Length: 62
Length: 222
Image (cartoon, rainbow over all chains, first blue to last red; front, side):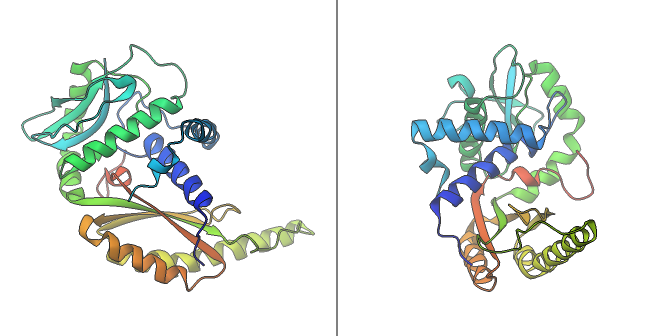
């Protein structure tokens, strides 16, 4: 079934963004891999920040 | 001290954007073929990256990927590097970057998250450990079916893909696909078509992202 929920789309986009920036990409020494709990913490903070500055739309590119 | 955002094929095209802490982006030559895109970083960060830093990194990488034909995003590094040290460590891994840049050229990454439909599934507490184990086995079997029915057809039309079976209550499986820019619309249509065939799950497609999940070619390890 199709998800037409913008809230779900935004939530997923945020989780996917944080996962990519912190856990994917070229890693050199000195980098950390945050635990799942760590990602969740950053994610909760991100959601609050984004909600407060109204930039959620920017995550929904194209 | 430098913060690394991405590696690109030389000559780097610098986007009209700033990095973390509004620091300007600049190119640092790794060798004659590859440039690193960096900004002057704070002397020392402590603990987990902040929201502003994560978003600043992500936005800069987005802009870099839009301006360059081939971009390998860097993972957020908590500790900034000395320029010489950064270049030395990149040169140590130089051999893997050429094939990786070639593979991602002209491509974006699309993310797929398969989540259970809201009223789907048995939420009751299992009566016994045996029942719990049986349910868990059933879930994993179901996800393996979904992997065949949803992921494999999409993987077949992507240049490259990765998948991750989670079989959790909030997320069943995740996958990422490397897709030529010109094929993104067709890929979305393929996802929509598959979505219509599965009532029990929802397919949430995100992106286009810079190719964070495709910075290593097959057979190499981080």
